[in-house]
Amino acid sequence: MRFENFTYKGNSLHCEKVDLHLISNLIGTPFYVYSKKSMIDRFKSFQKAFQDIPHRIYYAVKANSNINVIKLFTSLGAGLDVNSGGELFRAIKAGANPNDILFTGVGKTEEEILSGLDKNIFLFKVESFQELELLNYLAKKRNKIANIAIRVNPDVDPKTHPYITTGLYESKFGIAQELAIDAFKLAKSLSNLRILGIDMHIGSQITDVSAFKEAIVIMNDLILQLRSIGIEIEHFDVGGGLGVQYNDEPVPDVFDYANTIKEELKKSKCKIIFEPGRYLTADAGALITRALYTKNNRDKNFLIVDAAVNDLMRPALYNSYHHILPLNENDRNKIVYDIVGPACETGDFFARSREIKETKPGELIAIMSTGAYGFCMSSNYNSRRRVAEIMVDEDKFYVIRQRESFEDLIRNEKIIDQLFEK
Image 1 (cartoon, rainbow, N blue to C red):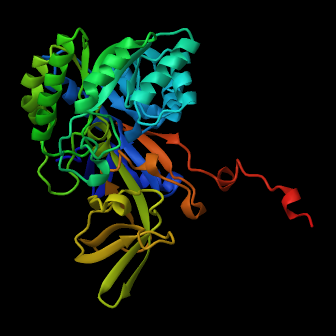
Image 2 (cartoon, one colour):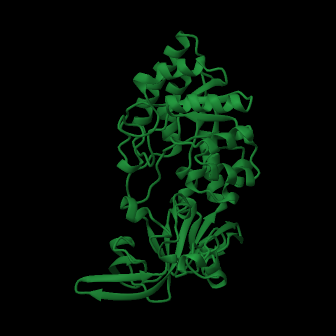
Image 3 (cartoon, one colour):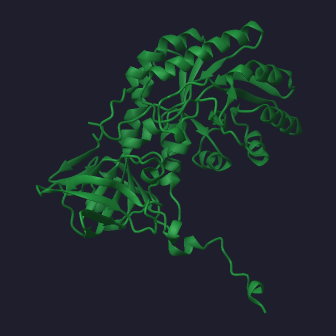
């Protein structure tokens, strides 16, 4: 069962060996809780699946950017894939070695590029001709040589949600495969760039691993073409995107994924880079929220909880399914609810027409598989305070991010008296 570190003991849901009611009583709701063991187990499984080929895992920080999560993966030997100046800042604050950091992103600013150069990060993944020229110009200004990989768009359909499909020609990401050779030729001609690799990332939450194989075949052909014109490629970054099971959809595990693509990866004669994020963290997390009210509008039953769309955007943004468990296991009858929050939006929901055990005001539920793209996508909409984050380590738990205060909401605001003078 994918929630192996969320289990009932004495009818009460535990994360590892900690009763989630205990955390709720001490810090209130809502809150995110993460199982350290789940993250470690997933990382080690990924390593084991590819142990027979030269590779390295770079954790995709965008999935869950808490500095304790970042530090956990670097302590396991992972590098980091960052997508903004803020994620780079977090990585450094978490103690990461800059030489273990890849900087990705389709729209890096000059400030972000200079920050990466000044910190001597390992590599920039470049996604346009203009970015190649800008990076070369800024590297020359800093009297440095910037390591690069070029992200190529192989135009492969990963059959996932259109918002997280990144490998089709109409996507903003990467350089079209028919332009890739010209991009590498330009990079080779620029004095302050050093070509190390080639990169792809076809999407997120991919459950059909044949799409990965199709894209790798295309990229292998490009690698051969590049070598034939004297451009050596040391590493092949295949990105991330391996899906997890949110509902009852069939999902390959990491060993199925490995068995599907390993032989093609070996043909590249490159060191392979992986950038998993969701696979490592999603099932490690849950959002714990308290029922406030129940009500009935004709044939519709509502369960109103104290978490809202600002805390977890995925259902509203992607119409995503998340399994929902009561914190108290019981034998009550099931009721079909719309499970909704208090925000001023009809899109403030976590489940629609979901059959769960009857839940009464004051009781707690867990919204599962929220360790990826949960807190990191949260906001202060409706001036709601962002929630606490908790890490569980066997029988202990730690607050790894405090719940925001009301003062935090206006910390960077100031009333300008001159605006109100007559």
